[in-house]
Amino acid sequence: MKTEKLTAADVEQAAAILARGGLLGIPTETVYGLGANGLDPEAVAHIFEAKGRPQDNPLILHVPSAEWLERYCQHIPNAAYTLAERFWPGPLTMILERKPVVPDVVTAGLDTVGMRCPAHPVCRAIIAAAGVPVAAPSGNTSGRPSPTNMADMLEDMEGKIDGIVDGGPCSVGVESTIIDLTEQPPRLLRPGGVTLEELRDALGEVAVDPAVTRLMGAGEHPRAPGMKYRHYAPKAPVTVVKGDAAATAAYIQAHLGEGEGVVCFDEYADLYAGHTVEKLGPTADKAAQARNVFDALRAFDDTNVTAIWSQCPDEGGIGLAISNRLNKAAGFHIIDLT
Ligand code: AMP
Ligand code: MG
Image (tube, rainbow, N blue to C red; front, side, top):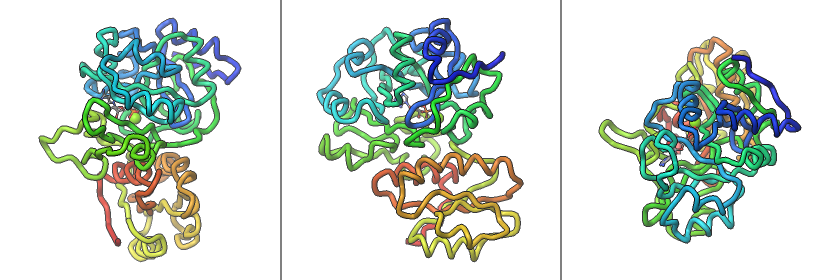
């Protein structure tokens, strides 16, 4: 199949691809998504094929406003409207009880559905023009780091999707925060652009799913089915070194072997001359680190590095999301100097 490359001006063409049951690469503020008409089970099934995604890992339904929640969800708690008011459009997905109209293939048979209203203006225009909820996961091949620009998504999806819209580089860079509102207290299933601190400010108590910060053991079942799968991982094994930035930089310098690569804060890049180095961003700029983390991990797949060492921000603010993605890329292989 030929993948049509569209621009922000081609909203009608993009919506037409969705309307005829096609697959569309869509820019969002978090990462590029692989979208299809969320009410068309056959179209949605093609998403799983293109990604090589396990059938039991549900998708998120993207809608143009909170007013669409009642179409697809029932027994909606007040917390959902509180969060929508504060954080939508934006990088927040809410897990709610679904209505039967939502196809099983979208929710992987669960009685809940993930709902998000994205902020990217091109994405919003496409959803509005299509007039249907858009089911989408991240636009990477299953297991690989998520794409944060059109070129990264084409690397995985060229020839497998009908079209892709170039909306520029993603402004957040990590996937949406997922909060489960079907439990009391609400539970954070995946950290993202809306921070845990912001959620607690809006709702009071918010629990954190154990899968956010540690590896799930055999027989344990995380509440976000996606969390049990290997994720975000480059081909070479990753080791994350946590702690004070200067200390972790020195630790990596002391342990770095021939042919091994480094993900580091910008200030420390000079320590690793002769190695493949990907800069995460300035130590103090977590927003930049979130934008860069997936591209940094992806870059190593074009090299022959045999192992990757990575610095990591602390877990405050969006640092929790960055640290979660790096830990998962490392299979929770972490050296903790704190
Ligand atoms: P992706 O953004 O590619 O990671 O895919 C969507 C994420 O949302 C996956 O981690 C899913 O497991 C998660 N998700 C979608 N729907 C639900 C749901 N009903 N309950 C829990 N997690 C969900
Ligand atoms: Mg994904």
